[in-house]
Length: 81
Image (cartoon, rainbow, N blue to C red):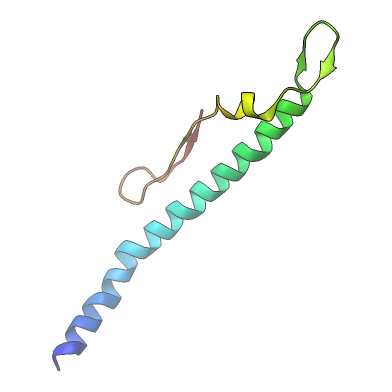
């Protein structure tokens, strides 16, 4: 059976490709959610100006944040900067 050998090879390669890829996706999703929550908190709690008004535009905070994503082939960590 020609197709059986190919199917077995494909099933064996699932472990080496799909699990690291899924892990990287999950790590990146958590990192992006953390950035979203943190930027909202910072924008809401920042006091700007002399009149002590709380809150600045979210866009100002978001443009300063960078997420270095996890990759399945390289480092499996996401960095938030």
